[in-house]
Image 1 (cartoon, helix red, strand yellow):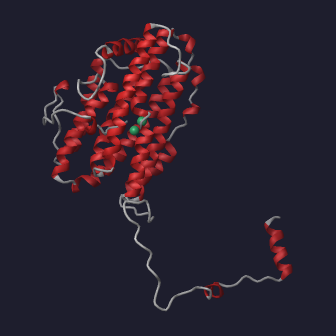
Image 2 (cartoon, protein in one colour; image 1 turned 180 degrees about the vertical axis):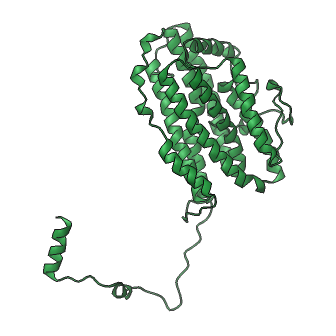
Image 3 (spheres, rainbow, N blue to C red; image 1 turned 45 degrees about the horizontal axis):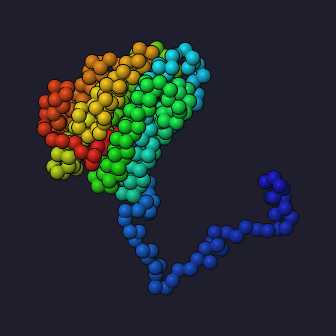
Length: 363
Ligand SMILES: [Fe+2]
Ligand SMILES: [Fe+2]
């Protein structure tokens, strides 16, 4: 029945709608007043309200809705696996699996952070920005998934390795995921324990580094499909960085001295963790067999030669220096000291060894 038929039927029955005043007559208002509802024990996602304290975050969220990309629209079919040798395919697959150790944890990491933001009643744009980062990270994860499936169906772990190189790649990936698992456990413990400013400083290092990395790789790759992926992901990461900076500018002024020292340690932890994909890992935190790095280098060299777009080790180090200089400048304004990064000849505070519990950063 269409709307006009309903109207007609009503007219025929001569039904008149009650007025609001008539409806309100049914309201029950106790003489002794209304019974207050119990307070929701906190932390809890209830009660809801949609407070806006940082309009700039709301603006970024609106932009995120329009700027995001669809990994399914990238012409994956034009990435022809037969134009590479089996060694090149597995080496390139290895790099995407390496990336997934960081980028594929993004969805779960940010989803958890989003739930946390709801539970501690962060303002609405903070919750929404977390959601948009989660959304983007699912897309980044999908890119890892699609690239891997195109190069080595069943990869990264469920295919039959035939050569020594393939066995070595699978074994290295298993070791990477072992450490990724330790990271996830540490992150889970940290998320409820620290203020957002601490969590976000860790995220920020990842976003600065990844946005620089992907823009560099988009220039270096020889394959249009990879170029499109790197460009799209890089654009997302730049937006994540803007979210981080906007949030931190609002959160840092209220940061206690105790947490300031913790942030310094977090930055060192970020360097230790992210160097695995951005450069080469320092020998702390990472639990790896002694042949890992040697095989890792062989696989990356083959992938680099095949035109994936991996920067030279020197360019990677330079990429890190640029990213760190940017973060350092931001932190100076808020009197947060920077850790020493002796691996890159960067002076600063010695924060000692880095353990599982220290690692929060994500792409
Ligand atoms: Fe990101
Ligand atoms: Fe990402």
